[in-house]
Length: 174
Image 1: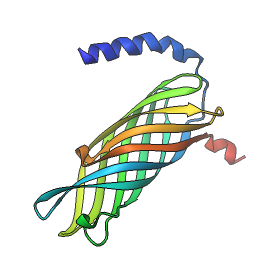
Image 2: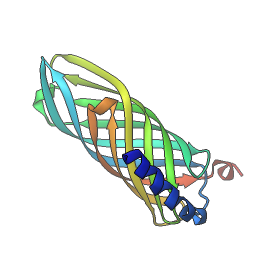
Image 3: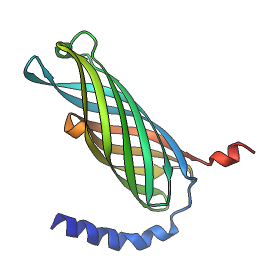
Image 4: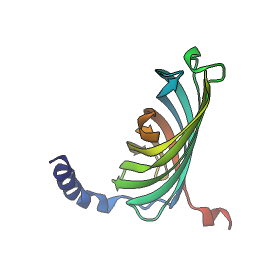
């Protein structure tokens, strides 16, 4: 039922995307997020809040589809996770956009790996990742974004806010 409703919504909104401006295919972004890490420490499940600083970049093959890579770094003050509670994230995503003139709604689906230190040693988790977000354009090439992303099958999830900039690589070489 929910899938049918989503299909209907996309079909109704698709004609509105015709006027969406053409943005250059390459983009990069910086983000700051409030995430939650769920980890197994000495047999106990521990949840810790972390601040994530992220960098992502991608290439749009059309107005509706892009491939995107992400890197992130987080640090937590939770002593339950050990002496060095640093977390490093890497991921790759397929991105599906529903672009309008000044707003773009998007969904992410891919995989990511997170590595972090806990009281009983180093941990590395990989898994399916996904998210949803919205970009609000202040200029034709630069936008603020707000997103929810769940990494590594839900072990690391949260919301983030950031800046996205689209650029045209060939024009930089001239």
